[in-house]
Length: 232
Image (cartoon, rainbow, N blue to C red; front, side, top):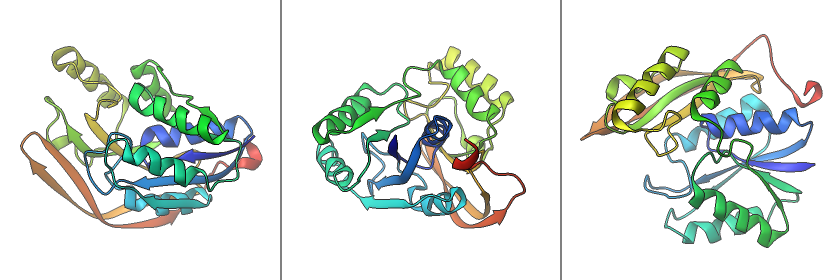
């Protein structure tokens, strides 16, 4: 099976890639869509401009495209982008958004591609534990929910943080895995990375009840162990 992965740089798309490689599939490329605005219904915005660093660490080609970020219009733009790929299917990290999954499935159907959503409706706490347990180093780069303050920005998620999110879910009703946009992430390292990313300079920007971590400078560093398609 030859596939491309919709890749935002966050924890879910990275775990979906990990899943695809573990199927023994030929992952032809990563596809990053930059909506150019933070209110896109379809695409992740924070740090989307740094997916080129992640693709270099992973060792896969990256197709980067800019879309309008306008509801429904960006779906048509997605179809145009995916029509350029010579693959059998598309893998996405959709977890609970019916809007997102339905439109990805429809675009794939229109193009004669298979649509794979390996994280779909996975239990949130289990998903978070699976991601962290696999060895992904997940950096929080955006928060937008009651109960999450600026101390979460720049945090590398741990099991302790997962339990804190469970308590916040009980109190405020937020999603433990951030599927409702409560928090956004950027992966610095993981089992699919042949090299890793180190953030050298960043700044927190907070407004009202939400904020983002802008990564101003980052570099790729070597690491001892890696995961490759050859040993998947």
